[in-house]
Amino acid sequence: MKTREVRHILNGQPASDGAGVKLLRILNPQQPLDPFLMLDEFNSERADDYIAGFPAHPHRGFETVTYMLEGRMLHEDHLGNQGLLESGGVQWMTAGRGIIHSEMPQQEAGRMHGFQLWINLPAAEKMKPASYRDITPGEIPVVDLPGARVKLIAGELAHAGGTTQGAVHGIATEPMVLDAALTAGAELSLPIPTTHTALAYVFEGELVFGGRGIRRGQMVVLGDGDSIDMSAADQGGRVLVLAAKPLGEPIRQYGPFVMNTVEELEQALQDYRDGRLTG
Image (cartoon, rainbow, N blue to C red):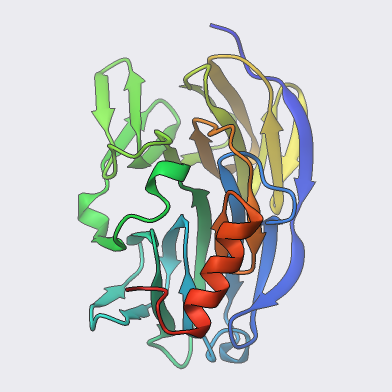
């Protein structure tokens, strides 16, 4: 197997979104890594940093993945659907042609910690009906490996015990989303399709990729190969591993709308103004 080498290191930047939620922006929508558009981490024990949440707002043309490590968040959409996202759970939403939804904290104290990831949709699927799936912690397969525990949110993972299918599959970009925790000194090798863009974001401790120490708040952009190899430093570490098949299509984005052409983007804005975004 060919190990993917570190191509770039991205440092998360403080930002805010929604009604003032403080977060760390790891992947900026202005510099996407096809098909990944954005990755944010929210992590605070201060209610003032998150309590205002994300009031009703629109999306079109991509998918959002919200992974909650700690805390409780209520999702509601324009169709009247509701979903309570709790610690360890995931919401996978396909905005498609349009959805208007809100994400509001259901706690007034304590830590709220999690991620939101944006994954692009291919041109042929950007206008399909919106949908979403709430995934409970018990629906996420866990693979125990020597010195490591891997939660498989999406994709599939081949390992010595066989192949494990993640909670989400059948997506056009064939995404892999894994949460891997390594004990001190442990080594982990994850097979990744050679066709995929591959990223790894360290959110606890420190991990080593190709001899380079990557600390909490840093993401590595990995080069070509068919495996991601890492080892843990003295304190161990935890990492969000992302991989998906690039679309190779033009991207035109304005805030919560991601299309392929300027004309499509202008149409999305007009549809939203006219109340036709979701129709």
